[in-house]
Length: 303
Image (tube, rainbow, N blue to C red; front, side):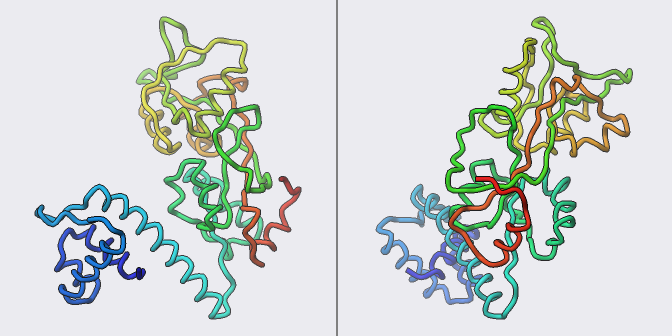
């Protein structure tokens, strides 16, 4: 099986048309069709439903498409890095981070380390959940990953055993809310059974959602919340809070400007704050000179 066959299949899945896909791949349609057929024979299953217009993928084809995209992405990344090495260039370190840290922490941190020209944010990671970062480290899709991590006890279904980390900062998730038309807070903790607080939440099994849940469980005071929506992204939750749909726990860096302007206010005092570490992870079995040099500058080491 050849990599170009996988690229052919991705093109066909995107265009749903043999002629257009062949044009994209710069081959004749007979040649393109023959390569798709060889791919199906190699896999031993039918990948394309040729009886529909436009063409559609079989269930096996849909699954195979995901694998094709992963393999071709990995080959492309490896090819780029090999070319850099061949050209005598220093290899750039690929760093994965959630969108909130990409916007509100990473630029300052890179400037403080002096490595802003040596580290490249891996933008595909902005849509990942926490476990995705460690899987990407294991398959060398990225070199480093920055994650929020709860300081207090918290049950997380994330396998970090193959990675090591260093704490590079701290953050707090603080409860915030918008203002109503009378200039009053839209939602205040702790709420009551009769009037629960409207809450814009993170996924229950996600890292931030688990951290908030664990912190509330440790508080002696009962909290009465009613979930209004659920989102993985702090930026999206912040927009809903600003629009007055309830309250949420958001990273303090993300809301500092809004708190200063008064467009957001605290929904509760500091006892409701959830302390977090900012951890920089690397896989224990991934080594190269640039990464090792940066890692040696970060103290103290954690395992």
